Each structure stands twice: as structure tokens, then as C-alpha cells.
Figure 1 (tube, rainbow, N blue to C red):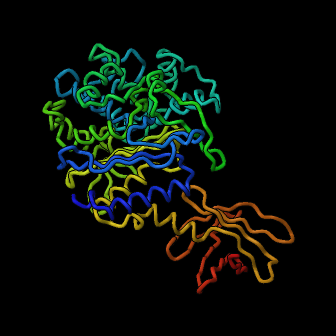
Figure 2 (cartoon, one colour; figure 1 turned 120 degrees about the vertical axis):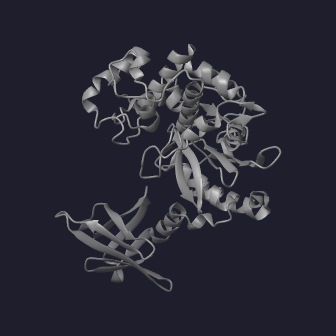
Figure 3 (cartoon, rainbow, N blue to C red; figure 1 turned 90 degrees about the horizontal axis):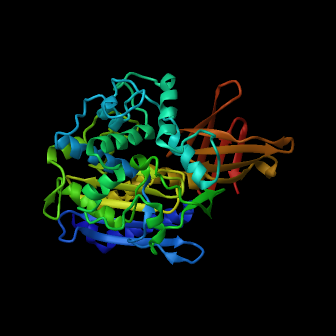
Length: 454
């Protein structure tokens, strides 16, 4: 699509990303735009900000980041390669390959689609917190035996029959990694490196923490503490590599995107059959954010289907997506997790490539509107005061005055564009909250009060 090469489109993308970096305290970002019709594949690649704040070394397209759950699509591809080769069946019981006490009805299909019936068992969160040094769950997870003891102990937590309910479960992908290992006869990460990374020329991608540290151009991980980036340890996902352990630059991920746009081929070599690959994109489970396949989710963005997946390991985040109909794809990586999925920024980049205004997407429009409404308010003569601030995907309000400072209340949107919200009272009743603009005056109406923004 030609707009991906135009200077105006590049400016739109650059301005969009730099604005969010500034507003959301993102130290560094790297982006690659893939045009499937271009000879080299990469239509645009850029780094923004700093891969390390102390040295101010810049983020580049070669900077290596943790890609978190984008790793799941690699695990799914490994599974589909084995299925395509006739070595594994999607509807077989995983107990054929796992020496663990899990329900016999669970199949690779269920684990791939997060429909096994298991809710999240929080193994990834526990291990990430442990390696970052920010919290300790006190659960033994140091070995494979520990992991399966945790899974087996959670039999009572199963919330549905396999196939009935979607619930994102990192542990399911950890089990899939073990299935790949059992079928192939080699370690999961060894398999992916030999059968996916090497054929795709992903030479700076690794699951190994020591190899990551040997790269000169690598991210410094940052956790956001009270809105400020603080340097942190990198949580290496050795036990849950299949669920979220890959480390990679956007240039390598661009090759991965080209592979998908080319229907399973790269450099004249076919890595998997087209039908098996397209099975990954199927609408196998309904989710609030769009149909889920095997390690991929489909969204409608600017009138086009965008197949993608995001990821986060608390100190870095990622999004990879592509549109088969537009023959376009993107890879976007950051050295922190800004409190929302990087998929939101990725869809903004894709909208710009598709010729739409990314600021009209709900995420960006909501950010703009919340910034407009946030601030300090006061009543006539300043007797009553209020603060409004954005927190996550909502606004919150605190009203105070001479009698005392009030507590924070969440404002639940009814019509964000019209400035209409409500708060719940202690009795559970809806208290309307309305913002109105009259010229330079922005007024907040709640209960008996009218307050003006300072």
C-alpha cells in the first residue's frame, strides 16, 4: 500500500508514537513496517527515544526487547508444523504427551485457544515478580515438577468444560511447549530456533538471557513506578518460554511478518503448509477484543482485518500484526509496559498505513478526551474544590471543601464525547456527572455543584 512509503504517513506515525511516549513515560520504542509487495519487505523502520536512559543510547530497529506473549504465536506455529507433518493431532488428548494429572478431554486445540477450562494460574506473574524482585508469591516454581504440581493442585479451579469458555491461560502455552518437546524429541527452544528462527533469518532473536546480555544494542528494562520509569531486572522466561520468553528486535520480527504475508514461505523455503498456517488465524474462540485463533487475535481496524497479538513482561511490551488483504504488517516494541497493551499503538500505526486518521480510533480519542477533562475545578468563590484525573481506562474524581477532603470516586462513562459519566453512591445509586464547555469555560456538574476548571 503506497501510503506506507509517503512522508506524510511517516510523520503521522512518528508524531503519534512520540506523543504517547511523552504522555505515558515510555523511554524507548522501535518500529518496523512491512510491505509484502516491496522487494526488501521493510518499508519503514525507526527507533524512538532511548534504549537506556542513563547513557541515552538511542533505541534503533536492531534493539532487542522482550516480546512477551507475542511468543505464543511462535509456539502455535511449532505445534502446527508438527500437525502438518502428521506427528501430532489437534484433537488428541494432551495426556498422551504430558505425564501430568490434567483432564483427558483437554487437547492441543483447547490449549492453543485458551479454552481448556483452566483460568489463569498466575505462574507467569509469580515468576516475573520473583525475577524483578518486586514480590514473592511463595509458590514453588523452580522446576518442571514444581510447575506441574501447581497445575495438578489447581484441578478444583477448572471453571468450565474444555471448549466452553475462553480464559487467557499462560500455563496452557507452557504445556504446549512440553508437547512440542515430547513430539519432536528436542527441547522446545531448540526446536523453535532450528525450525523457525534460523530459516527466517532471525539471528538476533533468542530465549537465552546470557545471549541477550551479550548484545550491545539491547533494551534496558524499565518498570513504571508512580508514572516514572525505574530500571529493573529482566525476567527471563525459562520455565514459560513458550508462553512469553522470546527476545527479539523489530527487524527480525519483520521477517516473521513477511513469512505470514507470504503464506508460510520465506526465502524460497516453505516452513509450514498454507492450510495449517491459516488455521492459526481462525476464529476459534470469542473474546472481548475480537476472535482468537492459535496465538493470534483478529481485530477490525480502519475497515480491515488485522491479525495480531500483543505481549508484556512488565518491563517491556510488544505488538506484531499484519493484514493479509492489505499485504501490510507491523512490529512495535517498547522497553516498558505503559499500562495498556501496545496493540493500541500498533493499531494506530496500522490505521495510518491504511489511510485513516489514527486519532479517531477509540483508544486515542478516549485519551484525548480524558486529557481535556482532567484538571482542578472549583465552585463559585473557590469554596468547593475538585480534582479529575485519568487512571487506566477511566476518570476518577475527588470533591472536597471546608468540611473535609473527599475520597476518590471512579467515573463510569456513558457518553465520553458528550462528557456524560456517572458515579456510584454508597447506596449503589447512580450519581450523574456531566462536563460542559462554554467557550473557554469547562464546567463540572455533580449533585448540587457546578465547578469550573481552573
